[in-house]
Length: 195
Image: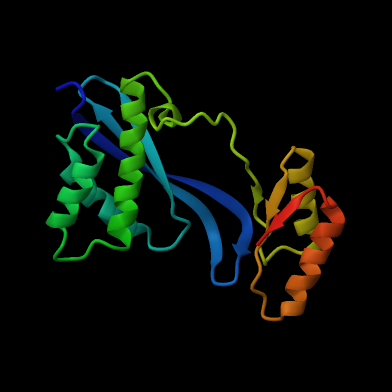
């Protein structure tokens, strides 16, 4: 059948960072993604990706390989069936954590390919009328100096973002309050600040 998943390719993309970034719980030395690319018998390709940073790459890759082997032969529109069947199959080891992450990336790739088979964007398949969604600039890492933080949020503002998200969770709450004050002063009142 032309909508059947014929092949799945998993690959990793790494974005090196010049110095580690940190939030309240993690120090991150690289930003990496696992990408699943599914190919249907018709030749249509769908993709999904998972932000993985630098921790547990082998565990995540192992879960993705298990899901890859399981998913071959399913039809691209069987998004709920594959989830159910995989959960039944993997019940002995559990269905939370890495397995859930792996199913999520596969689900996105299946929807991407399904939309392509119908020559429609996914938002139309879901029946949405919305053509725009609000976006925000994310970052504001705790490891940033005040100057780095301000440079980042001003860059987002100059690019037209209407909101910025910064990290909180410093050992001293006063530092978080001061960072928020400086961001508000830098971007003005027309930009929303999220934490």
